[in-house]
Length: 108
Image (cartoon, rainbow, N blue to C red; front, top):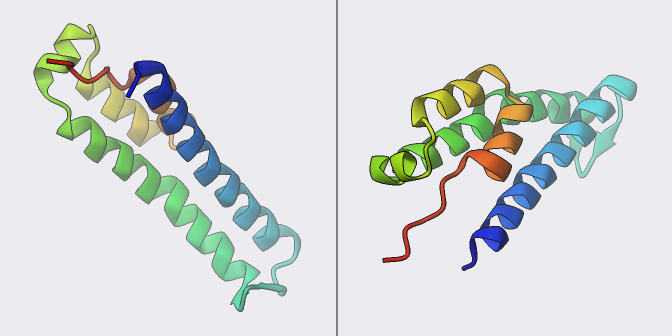
């Protein structure tokens, strides 16, 4: 796959997760006693917060750890710095990682 296509796919996936999280939090705040697909809006709010603050950054950090250190050096990027950004900026970190931080895969 082309490097640009990989970046677009990553940004779209992270963007869709962030949109789903925003909807869950919004429903939990505006209509806490309502339900959606059999789950209470409060439950959706709590689940969205777990996804936003734990699972999305963790998935991106695991992805970063699976990339060879040589690829990080070749792209002139720091794996530790990107993982720190993922940990300390749960909304912008994964989006920035998907759009800018992930080094391209080696072709050969």
